[in-house]
Length: 69
Image (cartoon, rainbow, N blue to C red; front, top):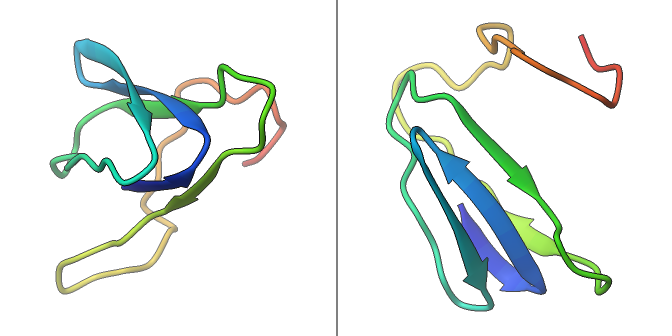
């Protein structure tokens, strides 16, 4: 995951940190993670998936205040 513009608050496992423009992080397979925009400016980011399977039907949502299934 990389930030194009704005600021992202990332929770990656047991670590929480801020990322800004031109910064990125790696989220290992199976790691509980979340992303939020802590600021008032729009957040733009790029997510890149790697591996032999790139579907999204294996996602487990532990909490979703936006009502996605």
